[in-house]
Length: 188
Image (cartoon, rainbow, N blue to C red; front, side, top):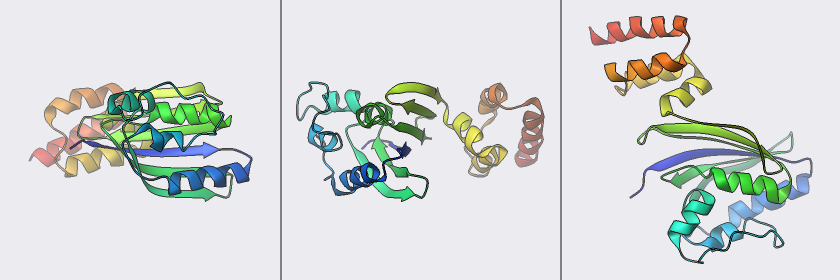
């Protein structure tokens, strides 16, 4: 059984009809472990890498995961398609980059997986990298939610003394001082 990596994908395109078509492709795609699942997401003329139809390892390395379990899918008023769901072991960053290239649009992904301690985000414009950050789970949570994310991890008992050195590398000095004071309070 894999660790589940949570993914939040944003696809922006002025063409609302295309966004609705892509939304429908994700919603109506049957969940399975083959290349067919991913092939159904792309335009017929888009050339996908040549991989074995049911070779799970090739599917994982090509798209980032052997599957994507969609939990929510909606279009916002600003012509943005939002997709949220889990993937096996790692994020589906390669899929998001390929969608950006195939549909000539802007895409981004935010992902986190606390069990294997990683997280990150990436943004693409027509298949080209705009931004990529692959980091630890705590770091990406701090970027997303600030000190509140660190405190939530303290409350859950997920932060130990060993993690304080890691935290000191990405928080401001002021935030780290506050974290240390709160850590002392939790320890007493």
